[in-house]
Image (cartoon, rainbow, N blue to C red; front, side):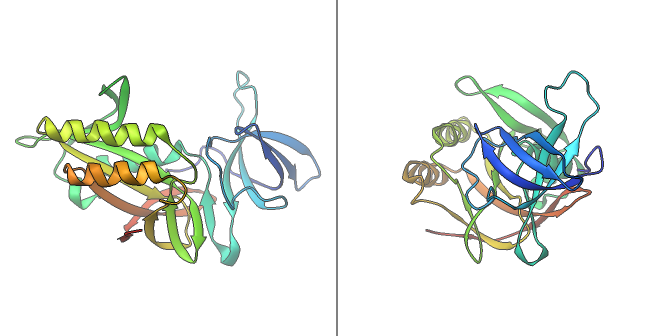
Length: 235
């Protein structure tokens, strides 16, 4: 997935009200950017961090700027926009580059299912059970090389796991796909200490037949691309 406009570099001043961030651009201009991330963003919103913003010429937008990336130590990057993983994974699914799901030729996004929910991607293929794919953005890192999810309590995430289990009970496939949107991790684990309820719901879903996949990403100032599979560790 390529960004629609060249990104502009800046320095983070503060992130507040979840969806707002004040940034100092390199020309000395201070602007307010949209932060498309409702989570805690632990370790990614420190004062002075180098960030990358995408400008928009859409006059109907309240804010011109969107915060996309934050630079990490060692030349690494993290994507902070939680809406991007759905698009990035969608490109991978429709291109057939996810081995476990490559047999599915038809993909639809945001299909209603469960209790007033929408599945991120629904796949269909001749002679195959429908597959329901829920995607979670991952960008928490507290130990070297280890990505974790979630970074705060997510009751909605636990609800999605229960609904995926229901789909398996009805004879379909259900997949929880974690997409690690940072380039300094090579393994994954649930942050059970931050949200024990989600960890318990995940264990129940796996016992019910819900599949789990984890992939990393390739992130540059040009865009975010689907990466390779990485292993999942048990808490």
